[in-house]
Amino acid sequence: FPPIWQDTMSVLQDQVPAKDWDTVCAIIENDMNKPLSECFATFEREPIGAASIGQVHRATLLDGTPVVVKVQYPEVERLFRGDVRTIKVFCQLAQPVHVPALNEIEKQFMTEFDYQKEAKQLAKVRENLTKAGLAGPNSLCWVPKPYLNMCSKNVLVMEELK
Image (cartoon, rainbow, N blue to C red):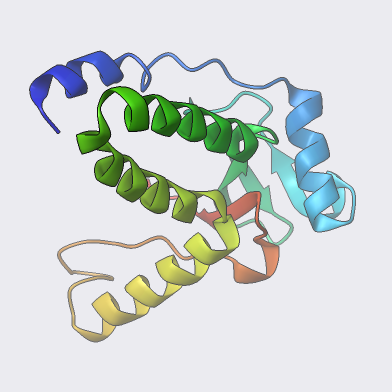
């Protein structure tokens, strides 16, 4: 994107306020179909990071494994679709040359709204890089292990990297 767009949009990336604990807990328990205490031995209420579509918390699995848990905000996909629709309508009238770029942005962002798919892609990348000798112990990088049985559209549980 042109620098003017990057500068204008950069304010949207920082200083996103986290959701309250009750909201986060309800999302996890709803997606897991059980109380948080039956999924995790510990769960830090304070997020280690918050972004536009969700936030990340440290937790410990019941077996003691340290993990991070990404939790997607409940309204984010609906709001994003509405915002893109509004921008596209405006661009169709005022700047139709930008509509193809907006269509591509929309397409790319829609892949971000399903953490279960993200977990499967992460597992595949981890497997491929490990087989190629590029990830894992004594390798160029380490790709976190997703816990697929604990992931859903709104929750992604993966190994914590230290």
